[in-house]
Length: 249
Image (cartoon, rainbow, N blue to C red; front, side, top):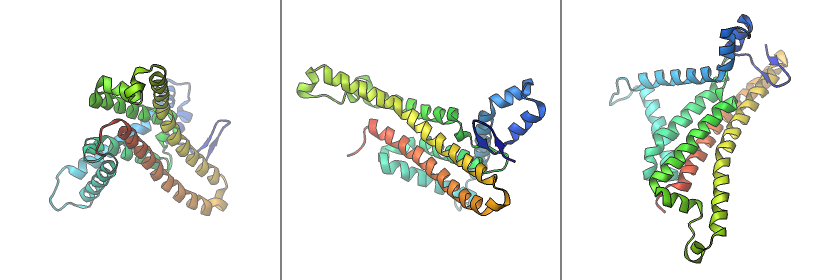
Protein backbone atom coordinates (compact mmCIF):
# COMPACT_ATOMS: atom_id res chain seq x y z
CA UNK A 1 0.00 0.00 0.00
CA UNK A 2 1.32 3.43 -0.90
CA UNK A 3 0.28 6.59 0.85
CA UNK A 4 -0.51 9.49 -1.43
CA UNK A 5 -1.25 13.07 -0.43
CA UNK A 6 -1.03 16.51 -1.94
CA UNK A 7 2.48 16.84 -0.52
CA UNK A 8 4.15 13.52 -1.22
CA UNK A 9 3.95 9.94 -2.46
CA UNK A 10 5.75 7.44 -0.29
CA UNK A 11 5.71 3.96 1.23
CA UNK A 12 4.23 3.82 4.75
CA UNK A 13 6.69 3.10 7.55
CA UNK A 14 6.00 1.31 10.81
CA UNK A 15 5.87 4.54 12.83
CA UNK A 16 3.28 5.98 10.47
CA UNK A 17 1.24 2.76 10.78
CA UNK A 18 1.38 2.97 14.58
CA UNK A 19 0.34 6.63 14.54
CA UNK A 20 -2.59 5.88 12.25
CA UNK A 21 -3.66 3.05 14.57
CA UNK A 22 -3.49 4.94 17.87
CA UNK A 23 -4.51 8.30 16.42
CA UNK A 24 -2.35 11.30 15.65
CA UNK A 25 -4.18 13.38 18.26
CA UNK A 26 -3.00 11.16 21.13
CA UNK A 27 0.09 12.10 23.14
CA UNK A 28 2.07 9.10 21.85
CA UNK A 29 0.89 9.73 18.31
CA UNK A 30 2.04 13.33 18.42
CA UNK A 31 5.39 12.29 19.87
CA UNK A 32 6.02 9.58 17.25
CA UNK A 33 4.91 11.83 14.39
CA UNK A 34 7.12 14.69 15.54
CA UNK A 35 10.24 12.59 16.15
CA UNK A 36 9.78 10.08 13.33
CA UNK A 37 12.97 11.03 11.48
CA UNK A 38 15.03 11.14 14.68
CA UNK A 39 13.83 7.65 15.62
CA UNK A 40 14.95 6.20 12.29
CA UNK A 41 18.28 8.03 12.65
CA UNK A 42 18.79 6.51 16.11
CA UNK A 43 17.95 3.05 14.79
CA UNK A 44 20.85 3.38 12.36
CA UNK A 45 23.12 4.53 15.21
CA UNK A 46 22.09 1.45 17.21
CA UNK A 47 22.65 -0.94 14.28
CA UNK A 48 26.07 0.53 13.44
CA UNK A 49 27.10 0.40 17.10
CA UNK A 50 26.21 -3.29 17.30
CA UNK A 51 28.11 -4.05 14.08
CA UNK A 52 31.16 -2.11 15.28
CA UNK A 53 31.07 -3.88 18.64
CA UNK A 54 31.03 -7.37 17.15
CA UNK A 55 33.61 -6.40 14.50
CA UNK A 56 36.28 -5.44 17.02
CA UNK A 57 35.15 -7.13 20.22
CA UNK A 58 37.89 -9.72 19.91
CA UNK A 59 40.33 -8.53 17.21
CA UNK A 60 42.46 -11.28 15.73
CA UNK A 61 45.68 -11.28 13.74
CA UNK A 62 43.89 -13.42 11.20
CA UNK A 63 40.57 -11.58 11.07
CA UNK A 64 37.21 -13.15 10.48
CA UNK A 65 34.89 -12.00 7.73
CA UNK A 66 33.23 -9.24 9.75
CA UNK A 67 36.52 -7.85 11.10
CA UNK A 68 38.13 -8.08 7.65
CA UNK A 69 35.24 -6.22 6.05
CA UNK A 70 35.38 -3.51 8.72
CA UNK A 71 39.17 -3.14 8.37
CA UNK A 72 38.90 -2.98 4.58
CA UNK A 73 36.25 -0.25 4.82
CA UNK A 74 38.33 1.74 7.32
CA UNK A 75 41.46 1.45 5.16
CA UNK A 76 39.54 2.48 2.03
CA UNK A 77 38.09 5.53 3.75
CA UNK A 78 41.54 6.48 5.06
CA UNK A 79 42.99 6.25 1.53
CA UNK A 80 40.07 8.33 0.25
CA UNK A 81 40.61 11.15 2.77
CA UNK A 82 44.42 11.13 2.65
CA UNK A 83 44.30 11.09 -1.15
CA UNK A 84 42.70 14.55 -0.99
CA UNK A 85 44.18 16.08 2.17
CA UNK A 86 47.53 14.31 2.27
CA UNK A 87 48.96 12.41 5.27
CA UNK A 88 47.83 15.13 7.68
CA UNK A 89 44.26 14.38 6.72
CA UNK A 90 44.39 11.06 8.58
CA UNK A 91 43.13 12.82 11.69
CA UNK A 92 39.92 13.62 9.79
CA UNK A 93 39.32 10.04 8.63
CA UNK A 94 37.20 9.12 11.69
CA UNK A 95 34.92 12.14 11.15
CA UNK A 96 34.51 11.87 7.38
CA UNK A 97 34.43 8.07 7.49
CA UNK A 98 31.66 8.14 10.09
CA UNK A 99 29.72 10.60 7.93
CA UNK A 100 30.00 8.30 4.92
CA UNK A 101 28.95 5.13 6.74
CA UNK A 102 26.12 6.85 8.60
CA UNK A 103 24.70 8.48 5.47
CA UNK A 104 25.11 5.30 3.42
CA UNK A 105 23.14 3.19 5.89
CA UNK A 106 20.43 5.84 6.24
CA UNK A 107 20.12 5.95 2.45
CA UNK A 108 19.75 2.17 2.28
CA UNK A 109 17.30 1.97 5.18
CA UNK A 110 14.42 3.30 3.11
CA UNK A 111 14.69 0.26 0.81
CA UNK A 112 13.64 -2.02 3.69
CA UNK A 113 9.85 -2.50 3.91
CA UNK A 114 8.19 -0.34 6.59
CA UNK A 115 11.38 1.63 7.17
CA UNK A 116 12.34 5.15 6.10
CA UNK A 117 15.50 6.92 4.92
CA UNK A 118 16.16 9.66 7.46
CA UNK A 119 18.18 11.45 4.78
CA UNK A 120 14.95 12.09 2.86
CA UNK A 121 14.18 14.71 5.52
CA UNK A 122 15.87 18.11 5.32
CA UNK A 123 16.30 18.35 9.09
CA UNK A 124 18.65 15.35 9.01
CA UNK A 125 20.74 16.42 6.05
CA UNK A 126 20.99 20.02 7.23
CA UNK A 127 22.08 18.82 10.67
CA UNK A 128 24.85 16.76 9.07
CA UNK A 129 25.89 19.66 6.83
CA UNK A 130 25.90 22.00 9.84
CA UNK A 131 28.25 19.63 11.69
CA UNK A 132 30.62 19.76 8.72
CA UNK A 133 30.36 23.57 8.53
CA UNK A 134 31.11 24.08 12.24
CA UNK A 135 33.97 21.56 12.30
CA UNK A 136 35.59 23.02 9.16
CA UNK A 137 35.66 26.53 10.58
CA UNK A 138 36.71 25.35 14.04
CA UNK A 139 39.72 23.53 12.58
CA UNK A 140 40.45 26.47 10.27
CA UNK A 141 40.66 28.89 13.21
CA UNK A 142 42.73 26.40 15.23
CA UNK A 143 45.09 25.72 12.31
CA UNK A 144 45.43 29.24 10.89
CA UNK A 145 44.80 31.34 13.97
CA UNK A 146 42.14 34.03 14.12
CA UNK A 147 44.22 36.49 12.06
CA UNK A 148 45.13 33.88 9.46
CA UNK A 149 41.49 32.77 9.30
CA UNK A 150 40.21 36.23 8.37
CA UNK A 151 43.26 36.75 6.14
CA UNK A 152 42.16 33.67 4.22
CA UNK A 153 38.58 34.94 3.99
CA UNK A 154 39.84 38.25 2.59
CA UNK A 155 41.78 36.46 -0.15
CA UNK A 156 45.20 36.95 1.50
CA UNK A 157 45.77 40.50 0.22
CA UNK A 158 49.46 41.35 -0.10
CA UNK A 159 51.46 44.33 -1.32
CA UNK A 160 49.37 47.26 -2.52
CA UNK A 161 46.18 45.22 -2.08
CA UNK A 162 46.84 44.99 1.65
CA UNK A 163 46.49 48.79 1.95
CA UNK A 164 43.20 48.96 0.10
CA UNK A 165 39.88 48.64 1.90
CA UNK A 166 37.24 47.96 -0.71
CA UNK A 167 38.75 44.83 -2.30
CA UNK A 168 39.57 42.93 0.96
CA UNK A 169 36.16 43.80 2.43
CA UNK A 170 34.45 42.74 -0.82
CA UNK A 171 36.37 39.44 -0.82
CA UNK A 172 35.46 38.91 2.84
CA UNK A 173 31.78 39.48 2.07
CA UNK A 174 31.83 37.14 -0.94
CA UNK A 175 33.70 34.45 0.98
CA UNK A 176 31.31 34.61 3.94
CA UNK A 177 28.29 34.29 1.64
CA UNK A 178 29.85 31.32 -0.16
CA UNK A 179 30.63 29.61 3.15
CA UNK A 180 27.05 30.09 4.37
CA UNK A 181 25.70 28.64 1.13
CA UNK A 182 27.80 25.47 1.39
CA UNK A 183 25.80 23.72 4.17
CA UNK A 184 22.55 24.65 2.42
CA UNK A 185 23.64 23.23 -0.94
CA UNK A 186 25.22 20.19 0.74
CA UNK A 187 22.03 19.34 2.63
CA UNK A 188 19.63 20.06 -0.24
CA UNK A 189 21.61 17.91 -2.69
CA UNK A 190 21.48 14.84 -0.45
CA UNK A 191 17.88 15.30 0.72
CA UNK A 192 16.48 15.99 -2.74
CA UNK A 193 18.09 12.95 -4.34
CA UNK A 194 17.07 10.49 -1.62
CA UNK A 195 13.56 11.94 -1.40
CA UNK A 196 13.19 11.69 -5.19
CA UNK A 197 14.39 8.07 -5.13
CA UNK A 198 11.81 7.15 -2.48
CA UNK A 199 9.04 8.84 -4.44
CA UNK A 200 10.12 7.08 -7.65
CA UNK A 201 9.94 3.61 -6.09
CA UNK A 202 6.59 4.37 -4.46
CA UNK A 203 5.15 5.65 -7.73
CA UNK A 204 6.31 2.57 -9.66
CA UNK A 205 4.95 0.29 -6.93
CA UNK A 206 1.56 1.84 -7.62
CA UNK A 207 1.53 0.10 -11.02
CA UNK A 208 0.98 -3.22 -9.27
CA UNK A 209 2.18 -6.52 -10.71
CA UNK A 210 2.74 -4.92 -14.11
CA UNK A 211 5.50 -2.75 -12.72
CA UNK A 212 7.54 -5.47 -10.97
CA UNK A 213 10.25 -5.53 -13.64
CA UNK A 214 10.55 -1.77 -13.68
CA UNK A 215 10.53 -1.70 -9.88
CA UNK A 216 13.45 -4.15 -9.68
CA UNK A 217 15.41 -2.17 -12.24
CA UNK A 218 14.68 1.12 -10.46
CA UNK A 219 15.69 -0.43 -7.12
CA UNK A 220 19.12 -1.21 -8.55
CA UNK A 221 19.43 2.38 -9.76
CA UNK A 222 18.36 3.66 -6.33
CA UNK A 223 20.99 1.49 -4.62
CA UNK A 224 23.68 2.95 -6.86
CA UNK A 225 22.31 6.44 -6.21
CA UNK A 226 22.42 5.85 -2.45
CA UNK A 227 26.12 4.98 -2.65
CA UNK A 228 26.87 7.90 -4.97
CA UNK A 229 25.12 10.42 -2.71
CA UNK A 230 27.05 9.22 0.35
CA UNK A 231 30.31 9.49 -1.61
CA UNK A 232 29.42 12.97 -2.94
CA UNK A 233 28.55 14.29 0.52
CA UNK A 234 31.80 12.90 1.97
CA UNK A 235 33.85 14.11 -0.99
CA UNK A 236 32.51 17.67 -0.82
CA UNK A 237 33.03 17.70 2.96
CA UNK A 238 36.66 16.64 2.47
CA UNK A 239 37.15 19.34 -0.17
CA UNK A 240 35.75 21.96 2.22
CA UNK A 241 38.45 20.97 4.72
CA UNK A 242 41.09 21.07 1.98
CA UNK A 243 40.13 24.64 1.01
CA UNK A 244 40.92 25.90 4.51
CA UNK A 245 43.57 23.68 6.02
CA UNK A 246 47.29 23.77 5.32
CA UNK A 247 48.54 20.84 3.29
CA UNK A 248 51.46 19.83 1.13
CA UNK A 249 51.66 21.31 -2.37
